[in-house]
Amino acid sequence: MQALAAVAIGVTEPNLVAREPAVRTTRGYVMSGLELPAGSPAGLPVEAGGPVGGASHWVERVTGWIAVFGGLLALAVALLVTSSVLLRWLFNAPIDGDFEYVKMVTAIAVFAYLPYTQARRGNIMVDTFTGWLPERWRNFLDAFWDLAYAAFMGFAGYCLVIGSLEALKSGETTMQRQIVLWPSIALATGLCILLALTSIATALKLVAKTTNRSPS
Image 1 (cartoon, rainbow, N blue to C red):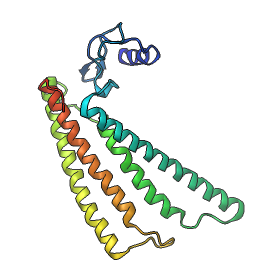
Image 2: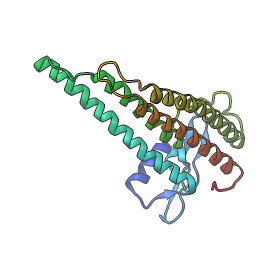
Image 3: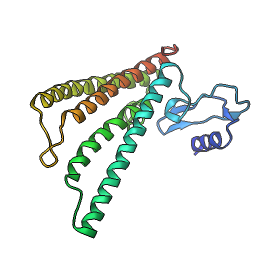
Image 4: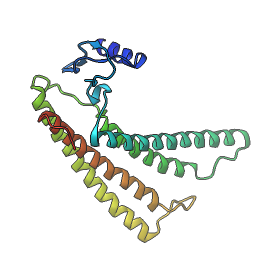
């Protein structure tokens, strides 16, 4: 509750900033107090909504705009489905091939969200067996799993590259609307690779934080 109150005050009163960094516990982050002036650097970590700097700032900004793009795609899918249902109900004439558009655009939208989620470290993490460790070792473990995540998504990106090239070579299309498949697969491939790179960036940030060095 203290953390929620501190964040709420920071939003409604922009002149207030954190006096001390948030302390990570097995139950989350606990704020220790607030003070003036606004020129002091905020101590909130990225996980608690605090500011980021350097390369991390740009990673979060770029992935954030891509996530907005994914949200617009999801909105477009919702409008398409709604329109198709209404047309079927009113005139018995749904949009032809609507399900093909939905499955392709939804896949791209999901891939668009993932890099920003990783940049903000918003994935669900369970620290049942590591909560007792010092913060230094928890950061190293988190960095290790970020690299493991990057390796897995890098491999998935490699497989998608092969799939994109094969779809391009074969000229594969959807069954009903005859939509060429390779552009959507290629776009998902790029987003998957971006996710892998973002995971590497978050791992480096954790290591830099642990060794008291600013990430480049």
